[in-house]
Length: 231
Image 1 (cartoon, rainbow, N blue to C red):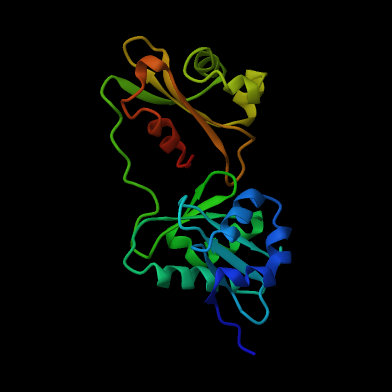
Image 2 (image 1 turned 45 degrees about the horizontal axis):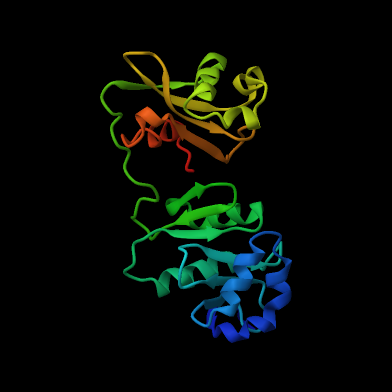
């Protein structure tokens, strides 16, 4: 038997219900997708399914489910099928990933078009299409700096008070986290900030906030891009 990724009717989702139910996150979205007759179902192999992908009609996010350790090549096979079905559509794919190890497998197969977007979701695009938009210029009158304890305190006082919900001790933030901010050159105050919600390792989840008086100027993207992260 040679495994082959195929598209199945969504009514066949009942046959792989244990795989779908085993995913530790996104269960409400998965159940809603299965109930929608317009959702498309892709599997890595119809006879011995180890990975399934739910492609809802709306929402812009596709949901992967399956064995924590799927058949070798299964993830790449199912994504290649998805890309072939989306031929001519250059919009990035948003894939909700149930297991961190799966991101490594997709990176091995599609590293040229791989960009992390949050804790479990990743963007894949067709070869030759940039996974993230070109970086815009920093707006006139602002500069980007890496946050130390003092700048983090300034950011928490205005641009993004949520920092202290994750990092009550800003000295620890300065030692263990990563943050960048956009500073108004004339006043020296933090106008916008992007910071890691957890100690930074290889991938990280970030928070972004902008002070009300500085919104609408494209600032929120600037400190985020300084780290090369995605929200």
